[in-house]
Image (tube, rainbow, N blue to C red):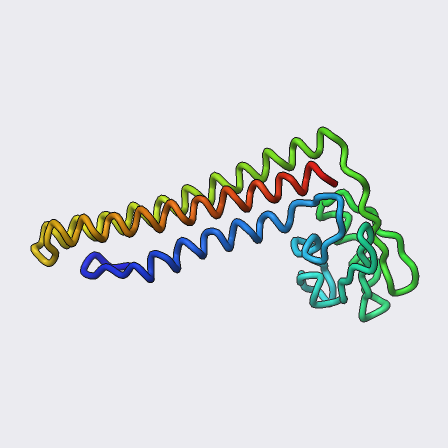
Length: 187
């Protein structure tokens, strides 16, 4: 956003990008239930290069506490096994031919508390990013008013809209966090 024009849609888009990033981070938190995105951080060294797991295998969730990884090339099975173990996800693959089975262990009470703290940290980062977008929008409004390109009443009206949008998006972050927290505690 430049300091010469004000676009509420651009602010909305940037705030929603922050909440989308927050939701993606929450998906990576293991809650005791299998989820294919749990393996997104896994990278495998094959064919002389490091690449994401989903480029060498198919990840599926056949049951709530099991992830299976179907490796496309039999020669890459050990590399995929090693990549999963090195990702420090707390998963121990069981090799069965070209298929790796990953049982999802139950969470301990301490691990649940750690996950809740991590979810709160992610939520706070999202809120900071949203507030930064808000601050930038407010700075643009102040500059436009100072330069005489916007009246004081227009500035006040647009500022109120930015604040309403900020409040709405932060409320959405809080609701998403509460849902994830309940999911972590429930499992």
